[in-house]
Length: 125
Image 1 (tube, rainbow, N blue to C red):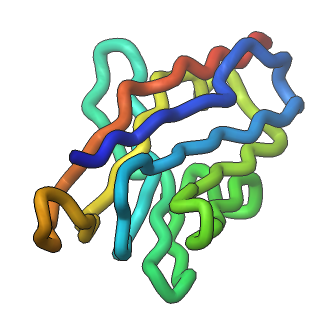
Image 2: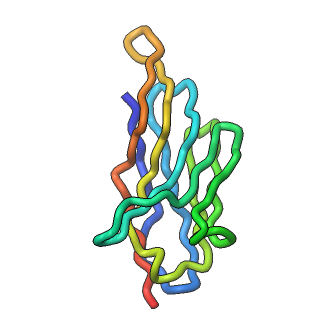
């Protein structure tokens, strides 16, 4: 099986920066799209940014120009650099993988729509 492990959340003042990381563990052969979502209290989970295997990116309008998503395929890791943070960015941030191909039990297998455990980001005003 494949697991996603997130890190990098925390408390920061408005205007500050944080970098989130999400590493996929296991005997991974390939990962296609990876992304970050967030969920604030009382709100639905929303897409923040995603990145294809070819590093094509997509951002929510609310974070364009402030957040940058990038990946290191050799480390099976996706990052979210968050600058100029605002109180409205406060949420639990979740890593997502659309499809991962890995080797287990003598065969290649696929897993779809994997989620990390979430990491809390709190931005104070």
